[in-house]
Amino acid sequence: MIVANVREIFYMKSPKLLFAVAIACALASCSKNDVEQPQQDQQPVATETAVTAGDSSDMYTPPALYHQKSITTNVDVNIGGYIQYLPYNYTSTTKNYPLIISIHGVGELGDGTPGKILKVARNGVPRVINDGKFPNTFTTSAGTFSFIVLSPQFRNWPSATNVNDMIDYAIKHYRVDVTRIYVTGLSMGGGACMEYGAAFGKRIAALVPMANCNGASTTKALSIAKSGLAVKAFHNRYDPRCSYLNTYNYVNYINSDAPIKPAYKTIFLDKKGHNCWAEASDPAYKESGQNVYQWMLNYHR
Image (cartoon, rainbow, N blue to C red; front, side, top):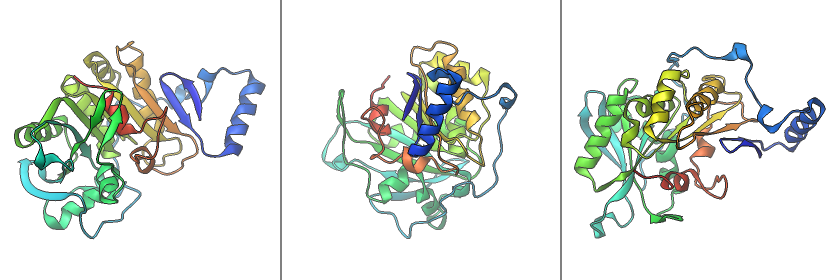
């Protein structure tokens, strides 16, 4: 792992690649901050980038849900249902719990009915839960916590308002700790994360976009920076569907405003596919001794 500075982490599994970068930097007398700087002509335009159906690299659909339950209900006009995960002791307590809203990719669009909702568990947090890899509790310096996880299925590309409707629904129907609400998403969902952060950033504690498919916007980045929202973004350097520059530039634009909470990015330098979320959402993957769920819990409103 090469730490470029306190705001960005580059991860490389290949020793040969690590050695090659080290030699190149030494020959060029480069500083750590020079690693993987995009060229000026590579800057993306500040517009949304559409992706084609099937952008999720893992098209596996589980035969059933384990540890989770599907709920078919019209949360709003764009959400026909969601997958529910509750803490192991939810029914035996009366306390409130941190909430994760997980937003799927465009390949998992559907109407929330039993025949479609299983697609949501192909990837990301609901996949981790369905595979039995999601711990009952997460411990940080702030204490030990369990999550409510709701993974809505969208009929069409989600707007910030759609995501906000899901949070309103969650607060109304579950015992949510409103100081600890977190939003994460992959591919299309990564773009929806950034849209939500720009529109409603003050409402949640942390945002975790993965393989964001929206081009970086300086205006939206400024809104996120001023909201005091914690951001940790992931992307593969050689993503063929959604450029890593979406993530690279978004985080840099946020940090250019000197926010109280600097945004972080992890660019997996040796990854060539679109799927960065299998690793990023795995509780076994840690940076600075913490997985992404422990990182979220460092922040509250």
